[in-house]
Length: 151
Image 1 (tube, one colour):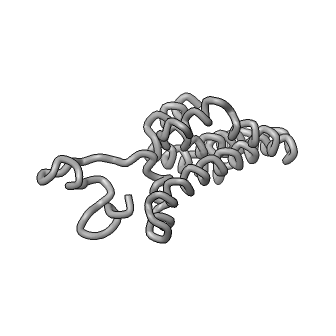
Image 2 (cartoon, rainbow, N blue to C red; image 1 turned 60 degrees about the vertical axis):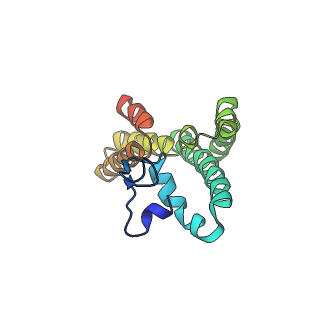
Image 3 (tube, helix red, strand yellow; image 1 turned 90 degrees about the vertical axis):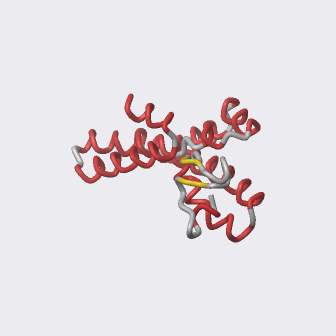
């Protein structure tokens, strides 16, 4: 990801695969990768990988806590369920599997919370935030875009 952001490369096309012709491809999760790219510049790829996994787990727990707080008006319930979400067996399997796309669920609770707030308060601002979050999720993972479409 770090090399694709430096000229003359771009994040969609690379000649590191199928050399010399190159290939059009998208590294998933793309948005999460862009957020974590500065860590790759600063610490190298191994530390950046570990930090990105830790960031995705933290962001998933925090966004779940925020969603539950929106639904129940209780941060203690949010923290409890955010912690439960980050320790669920399927998520831990995805961590050991090494597939970051399975862990990049952090946007879904933000989307659901923004959508619920938009519908509950009839807020145009939260509707726009929900739409922007759905777009970010769709770029981050096509699979998670399907979940947004179902919501």
